[in-house]
Image 1 (tube, protein in one colour):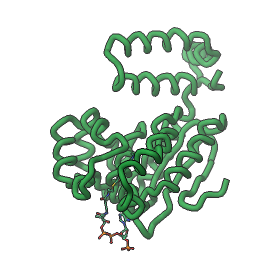
Image 2: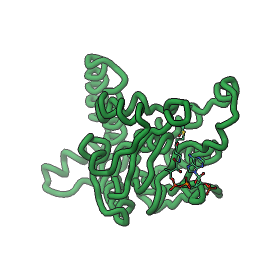
Image 3: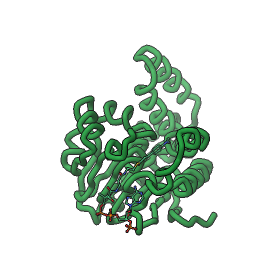
Image 4: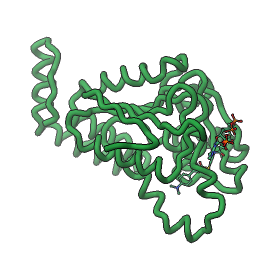
Amino acid sequence: MAYEYIKVEPDPPIATITLDRPKVLNALSPAVIAEVGQALSELDADDAVRAVVITGGPKVFAAGADIGDMAERSAAEQLNRDQTGAWSPISGFKKPLIAAVNGYCLGGGCELALMCDVIIAGDSARFGQPEINLGIIPGAGGTQRWPRTAGKFAAMEVMLTGGMIGARRAYELGLANKVVPAEMSVAVAQRMARQLAEKPPVAVRLAKESVQKAFETSLAEGLAAERRSFYFLFSTDDQKEGMRAFLEKRKGVFKGR
Ligand code: DAK
């Protein structure tokens, strides 16, 4: 499918999505989010793709939702647009999703990064939730995912001040897995995506699902779900292949069954 605001580069077993609205710092209009959602839905359904990198390119990740689009909307209009549904192919993506973040990563852009499974930060990255300065609060999960990721006090600081934190502080807070030179972030993310793409896909999917559960359920429910997935994996060919390959001292080849 042809896209106007993003570039999608499949390079099986990975694919890279690049936000491409540089004139407005990759502001996430509804059309951009719809394109990202469409691309991710297609990549989720494509067995040849096992991990995806999302980036805004070398200069900026995304400066948030498109303020021009929101400025004059009424509460009812906002409610009726089902924006949350538009973001669900991102938060519900089943394969590993790696963000390569350079420059501004603000508002909805930061919330998009927080929906990913791994964040590779270029040293130019600046994370923040400046919505407070616009008279609103984050609406795509920022108030919930920040404290679960970086703790209450860092979350309060960015939410209430609207200020930004740099790549190094983000790393110290657990908001980024690595800090690398900005020009390397996409390549580093793609390398990691390729590593993950070699792992058994069903186990990868259930590992992702289980970790996500930790944010949504009680410990007892999360442990029960983990156990169910653990036992289920013994019904896959990939579990047999993985354990045999270990015992035979060779590298396992996984088929996703
Ligand atoms: N929207 C629209 N245009 C934007 C933009 C944005 N978020 N950010 C930047 N631009 C545009 C600027 O208007 C400017 O356009 P021209 O004037 O050239 O036409 C161009 O990008 C370059 O920006 P600046 O000239 O401002 O560049 P600077 O380097 O001076 O400053 C900046 C960069 C990032 C500090 C500044 O642009 C800035 O503060 N931008 C706004 C950041 C912001 O407030 N972001 C939060 C937006 S609210 C929801 C889902 C998501 C959301 C809500 C609900 N649901 C599912 C319910 C998300 C909300 C938000 O993200």
